[in-house]
Image (cartoon, rainbow, N blue to C red; front, side, top):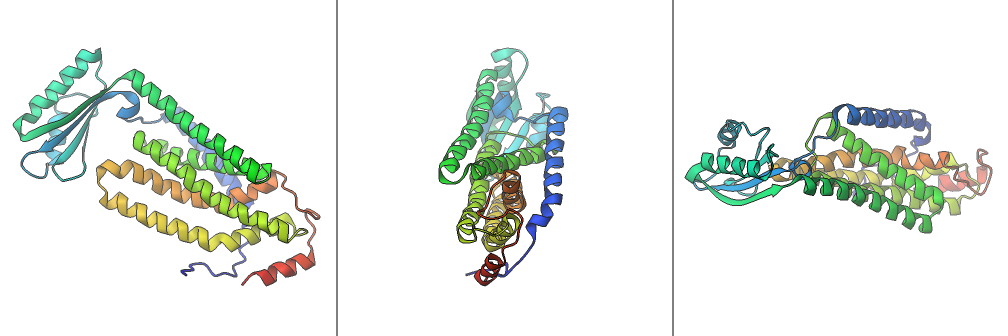
Length: 315
């Protein structure tokens, strides 16, 4: 079995919480400020507009030339992206002022400009009401997923674990959104799907660490909680790092070679994997101390017998 981290690591993660927690709080505040100042750069899925799928009849399409052609129509910040085969292109136009008639005029302008060189394969118009529904449904989907996680963990673990897991997952989502907002990346349905995927990924990592902490609580009933958490994190560190690296490399390959159609999803996933790994190590477990999780013995006293048992437990 591949082991990137030695089994007998004794990294004092709990000492770092005095640094990592303020860093996380500062990043969360920065995200909220950026959200208020810059807002979210919603894609056509959430703002409305026109989507046109075309295929170049003469082989791979020249995207730069096509961008110049569409940009010359002065229809706003149009997007031209290749996907699938080299001859397939997706054109997204922002919503045009003037209602349905204006959308149709914009579509006709694009079709006329493309001429006979391109085959029009699909056109869609996303209205403002549909966009508002998508934004609302997306927010509800994230909130419901976190609520169900809270209920599940509340039944399976103590309430501190449930609250800690939900707060950690919310931390990961907000920081991922912070990267998207600060760099003004487009947030569309792909990005939303990536955020929901990050919820599952981050939660899984957190539950692995929490499960080991729960086992340690039964095994070392008088060990001080900081020592017990350090022991549990070190025991699961190899698994956490291996999972993160393999997932990151797989998504990175999709980001590089998957084309423009999947770029938004893959980039959001890459950011979420990094943040989720960071939080599962230095945010989720230390949070249990702030939530007053109690061990069976003295909260701060060192039980020599349990410490000796823990030392023996480390391979």
